[in-house]
Image (cartoon, rainbow, N blue to C red; front, side, top):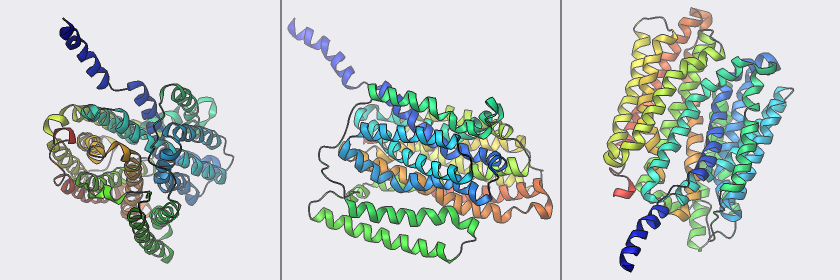
Length: 484
């Protein structure tokens, strides 16, 4: 009788151990959504900012670049601060900073103050985002983690694609005459709610093993990332002058010095900022390359599409946003599909997704060079095709990167992943942006024809990056970590 009672009670214990803490996960995923959204929503708002603040092209670029730069440079340091002082504390600090800086963005009287507020907002995002990945790795049982990574991938993808839609809707609504400022005001009530919910529902999860911050590593890595990301963001508009290439060379030297510092610290039994042993895991190192490639093509393509629709076709922010809607829906649906079938089919899901994604970019380029005049209805079907592939490959890619990482390394691994996303985005915008704008000559052939030609060239460029991503996919482990 006693044995039967113990047997009857065991499933409930196991069920509790295997439960996903959805309340906590939902709070941190909301922070992730807002951080990614604010990387893209400003792209749609750019024309309105120019008109209202009389901002120059350089000012507008820095509204986007300031956020990306501080975000990318401080992510890894934020992960170690969380290990030292507690993830909850650093997460709350990030939410507060992100929310307050959003108020400053919305109230900015000129371009300079808006840029400064965006830099601080990027710092807030850097403090929040790595904790999201770390909480998923630490709190969710390994056997259930693929489901949460599926939701996480959907959140990131919808923030990326949906940023165009949401930005267009908010600017088009023009509530109380707020115009572009509404894209920042919307963060405020959400940020306050996130903070209050996090205080109650997000647990403290630091790393007892981390005793001090590797300051030499922090300084050298921050310099390396700054020297890498700054020229990627500014190089194309500046015409690739000598200082850009000097920055790239300095970045390479700084990264080399960082490796030397970290290896020396590991040999002495210290606590490096980034344990280089992480990169000895095939799934992690290849996964980081895959994330770099995927975010390079996502960031750059949607920038090119936004310019094509608004500057080329003369569409409003609302009209441009609505043009993205079918693609956003397709991405959401197929991300859900991917999260459900990846445990059974493993790498084959990513393989199919990579092929469909690359086919979508190639189809867009071929369609536009075949002669038809570009219209939103012409490119929407191929945008949907891209989103089908993106949903199948982008969502599982995040699980691929982190699935074999030990819980004690979750924070720093998450920081490296987030840095790869930002660096990949900056790299893609630099390369494909240069290709797009060098092909965009409205004065010579008219805005519509020029936009169609430039977008075709950009589509072929992103097709090349998608092929690289596909090649990496075929080198990944065939099964998820829980099934290997």
